[in-house]
Amino acid sequence: MNNELVDITGNTYPVRSALKAMGGSWNAARRCWCVPADMADEALSLVRGGKVAPAPADTAAPAAPAVDWSAEQQAIFAWFQSGHGNLVVQARAGTGKTTTIKQAFSFAPETGRLLYAVFNKKNQREAAEKITDSRVEVRTLHSLGFYFIKNFWRDAKPDDNVEFDRLNRVYDGRLPLEVAGVVLRLVGFCKNLFVSVPSVNEVLEVIDARDISVEDSMAEAFPDVRLAELAIGVLRESLNRDALGRVSFNDMVWLPVAAGWVKPTFSLVVVDEAQDMNMPQLMMAERACQVGGRICIVGDDRQAIYGFRGAVSDGMHLMKQRLNAAQLGLTITYRCPKSVVALAKEIVADYSAAPAAPEGEVVQTTLSRAIEGLEVGDAVVSRLNAPLMGIALGLLRRGVAARIEGRDLGKQLVTMVKKLKAKSVPDFMKKLAKWGEKQQARVEALGGPYVESKVTLIQDQVMTLAAVAEGAESVDAIIASITDLFGDIENARREAVVCSSVHKAKGLEWGKVVLIAETFKNKDKSLEESNIYYVAVTRAKRSLVWAE
Image (cartoon, rainbow, N blue to C red):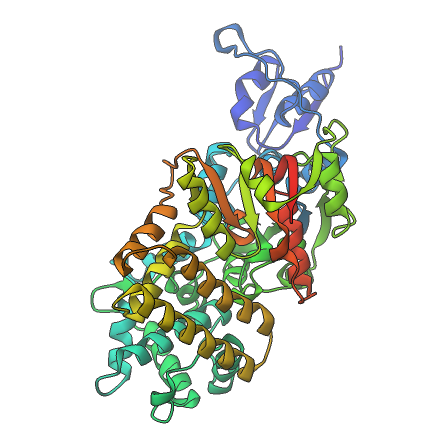
């Protein structure tokens, strides 16, 4: 009999009873379990989540089915188990990213606090349900930042109104409400772009790039330089504790980074959806890692579609360089059928279907025919929002449940309707058209990056509101229609045909997806537009309909 003992590392705590039953024992000096050599293979399989070894009779549990992990997944597991270096994972759409990361954590030898940083609360809820390792904290970066803030300002509480009070302290006098709104919009951009208080020239670049200005009648009193100075004043004021302990949503990441409050807390940091992160978010993740700790950046650079909002377009490449990280990939999709993968592969060459994936179908038809065939559980995806309004309203008139994805978008549209202060529907349409012309002219005059995207967005807003206003009897009726169409209460969403923009569809999936072809014929041939198409087609699990 071989009495030699073999060290077993990884997340052994959940299976300690089974390891003990194999004749294993805990070695406190080496901080690992040791099992007889002839039981080593079985023990390793148990720890890695494969075939489960028999547990003692009094603690026996049903054996979990073995998982046929791919070579790509096993390579990621091996990195986690190694305990060394940093890693970037290119995880293509539907490739089992969260499932892989969940399993990968079990291989990590770290005994301290581990962080899984996700993009938003929805991602946080989903990941928290899957990841049960007690060492792992699943957080949004905003919640993590608020945690660091609370270490310095113990009575801190979220309240976006604090930004107005900061501006009032900066400006000596009564600032026109419209100007205040423009300045605070600029502050928001700065807090999503910079990791410290920027210079006047840096803020002026933001003003040019983001089409930020006041009405022509106020431009002389509040030129761009003055707007930049006011924004910088608010940013500096943000570093001082508010009397009531209030912090804005944008403060939650920017403030701890700019103030140097981020503590190296975690021995292993995993950042998900890294392609959508802005620079303050990426810096927070980096600084939250302990000296000698490890960072794993996970994302899909071809799903980077938020450049116009301040996301770092090449953030994953940048972090790979900063961290001197190795790179691995997840390229086999378990979501999309082979016919859909063939389309996506024209955009992303390293994308492939699972061996057992169904053929599926890609269909070309007219838009009217595609809409007639829609059923509850299907989705309509558009590059723009405007067509979705008409489709959703038409479905509702036919008695088919329909909703538009994006409650925040609904709120923005309602705010815009109120801002125009129209007294009737004809008056609203006139003011809406005038606003659109003025905004488009301003964007084109300023130039800079994303001009075509910005113009398209303005046109989309006008057409979206015009579609809702058509047939409405009053301005109040327009607001009521918007509220109903976007009434998608989280965790209690009604079953319906989902109408969604590509940006709102990101991270979601449906059996059948109808793409409104006309909205994807953008003259802008940029990488971001190519990414948008890739995101759109990879939402389909069974059938993709290209509707002309």
